[in-house]
Image (cartoon, rainbow, N blue to C red; front, side, top):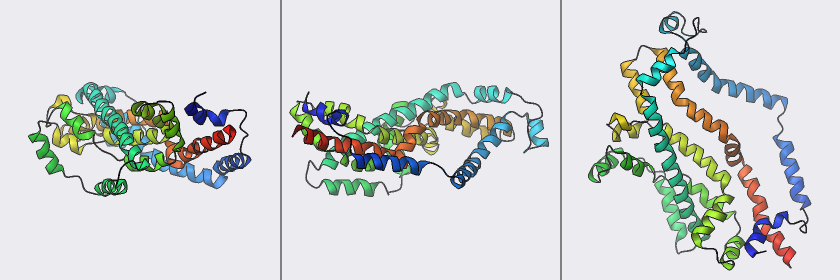
Length: 315
């Protein structure tokens, strides 16, 4: 078995004994995650406060305009689905959904991959003054977004009002880079040495070793990046004037001018725009909780200790 494979899977080798201290810490963590009665009550109340606006908006989407004017807060008297079909047609959501998926997925993937490739050499300190460069990136994250310079730059470079230009402008954000630097530091350097001994190239090492070890972190920032791109309204308002390039947020914004008094129609359009976000959260909530609540750090503990255990077994 190669050195890299041994170091990656050494913790699964039956010859390597399970650390009783680590097992005790894991059992203590599981017990700590169990909700008490008070914690469960607080969780239900908090979830209710967050869910009530969505439930209210969903109920209003099933009303006709007359029922809403007669009773804006009550249950629908005459349930109807016509608001959803009308909102889908009038808002041209079929085209805008495709545009929003492109604007959300492509920059998200590019940003995550570039963030890993930028964070890895800085976290390993492969060149001089890497801390200074890292501090520069951290400082740049606190600077306000300059929409006017960005607008002028987009016009001068031919990036204004076209799909490729908009993707270029939104694919260079590095919010996850700061977290990735600290996360990669928890991945043991022995993996780098083992990969070099096995003749593993740099690109192959990043894509087959580092990125799989960072799944919780990547999933967490993928969700955040997707939501931020999907909900982005200011940049499409400034950079996209062609209605065929509009995302769903730009199409939803047009409802407040054309159908400002038809609140059930606006509620249906809002639920259509919010539905993909709810689906993403439902599918990736496990990874989101792991990355945010500390599951990612717990998951990397075994990876970090694996090379030590493997080295001890080899000796």
